[in-house]
Length: 367
Image (cartoon, rainbow, N blue to C red):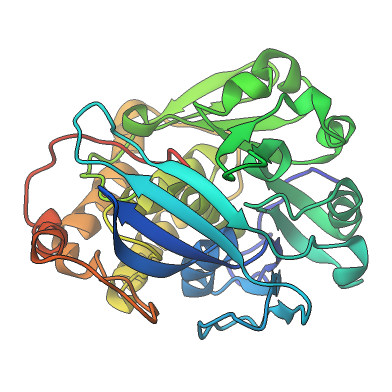
């Protein structure tokens, strides 16, 4: 059944397959009027950093222009008559400006239903960032994927025709609302949730609301379950929601319960906001996290709904947090794959100090 989540039937279950749909981008990060970094962007690039580390077999459908300057493991579709989607993210040192202002400067071609393969997949991730996913594209994903995860930003983002500033439109005003009963999970940040009407949407699909320093909430038709955050220092929120979604899917693919999978999503979201630009996770960190996931899966194998007492739940949190603490020096990479990275000595010092300072807030998963 479309939208139904299934876990491996045994410890030796086959490797899960995933279709990831969303364009790669070029991100320019600007602080106080000056460019501090240029980086690979787009949800697919952030998601691949997690799912490939968890041995989930992924097929990516992304479009770029001939100007695309990055080396990626998944070859995108090059559109000769278009340029790669470009975003400018504006940051400020002013205390009152706690988040970025995001502008789409240009957009590559949309991803059509005909661009998708005809193969079947265990999971599908609709993760557009620049308006590239069409209703008919999502409908085809639903037809070829057993469970579809949708990031609401792929459906409700609109862009100012003058300067490209990102805004949102109510989901009911889009061509996607009628598809809600056929998707498995809808992910939205707390800033995006008001455009969804969660109370009505929860009757049609499961919803995950990410809420920064409060972690996330798993919402079903009859229940709401809050999942703990991992305190961290936010350097750049870009990609945090993508990493959260990838962690969630990685957990489900490896047989974790839904609450445990959401906690794994929080974990990767918290690591992503500690990095400037495109995230990259050290292989040792990923190996340790996978070991924690396997221990948890063996303990809870066979149920996506069972939830034990608080002490038992804390064990997985503590295990992941211990990995994060031990592997802190590997949690942050300086703008990998950036062809023209620029930063001041002050910015560089900030980045190197992030993993060594005690947490001063716990902002995550706001994308």
